[in-house]
Amino acid sequence: MYPYKAHMKKAIERIFEKPARPGMVGDGFRVYNYIPGAGISQQRISPFLLLDFNAAFDFGPSEHIRGVDVHPHKGFETVSIAYKGSVAHHDSAGNSGVIYPGDVQWMTAGGGILHKEYHEQEFSKKGGPFEMVQLWVNLPKKDKSTPAHYQAITKEQMGKIVLPDNAGLVNVIAGAFNGVKGPAETYSPVNLFDIKLEKGGELSTTLPAGYNTALLVINGHVEVNGHSANEHSFVLFKNEGEEIDIKANEESVLLVLSGEPINEPIASYGPFVMNTQQEIVEAIQEFQSGKFGYLE
Picture 1 (cartoon, one colour):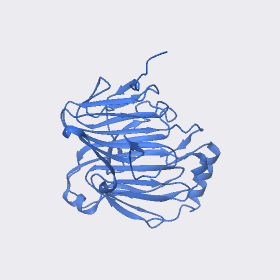
Picture 2 (cartoon, rainbow, N blue to C red):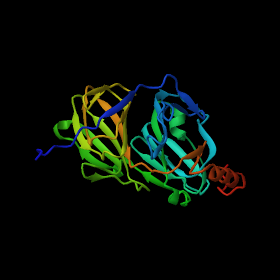
Picture 3 (cartoon, rainbow, N blue to C red):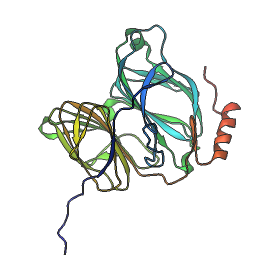
Picture 4 (cartoon, rainbow, N blue to C red):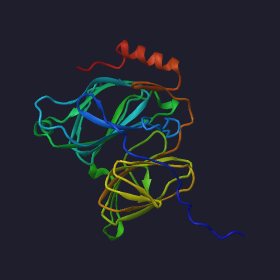
């Protein structure tokens, strides 16, 4: 008989440093693209399709409201997480809202929608540090035509874990962290954790070995399963082991993403993500014919 073994540590496949140069999305989002820009394929990190990180940047005060003008989406979800500054949005279904630091906007584009997102008016006038993440999450084939809708999740609604010994705080956006659930409803199993650690703070959690799992260091410097991860680095785990141990060498903010792979073909073209090229052609035709509605 073999003795009982505790959870194996999740092995680390690679730690990616911050991409060399940011790109602009519209004129309001200065982003570093990790998925797929760092060379992480959409199939490798499924169900996650894209991760853009607007590292803290002061755009300065402006009467012109910076952002991204009207554009379509179909076949997946966009998740916007605000750390600094505030973001407003409007869509062709008549929805609108603002997210402030700590809030999340979870938009299910599903069968198709037009939307625009931009710096909230008062923030734009004052200027100041702006920091956020946008994550794209794929939808299974059976859900790609679901009616478009939003989940507006405030920081107060998050599942919260206060770590022992004043180590820090975990905000559970989706899934569950050590038994505490987050408010986001997802179409496939997804865990999304916003973690704040004090200097010297430690935490331990487990995630399924078969889930595709990664971690972005928003701020600070941490040790992850014994490996050093610098500020703005992206840690990609192998699909081996379950346990993640993190220790903060300084005050740190982390985003952990983990999800069950959607084992289906991916066909993507700009703001459309479907299963086949024919479905992409159909999505473009639907957009051009006005089926996604109208938005000024």
